[in-house]
Amino acid sequence: MAKSKSFDETVKKLCRKKITDPDEPILGAQFTVQQAIAAAIVKRAVGGASDAVKLIREILDSQTTETAGEFKVNIRVVD
Image (cartoon, rainbow, N blue to C red; front, top):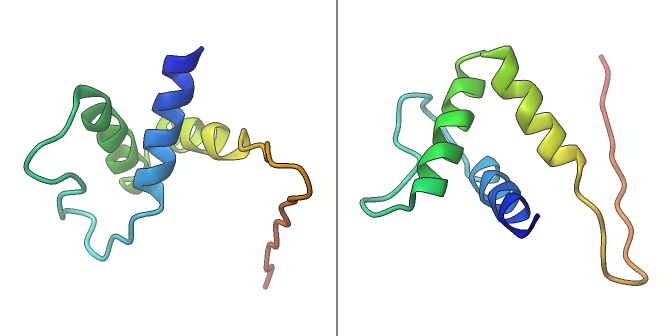
């Protein structure tokens, strides 16, 4: 379980990066296999692959607050 939690954190970290060009590299010169897999999932999601988008949504939606007194508010703007 700890390994999947670690992978989830890697995906979340890559999702927080600002990407201006879909073709630009997400990772630096050195990276782990876990980071490479997470980057591939993010790249596929940016490219529109529905399975990758679904996986990222599941990972991002699984965020829980473990600190007492902290809460999270999701705001969705609909035009």
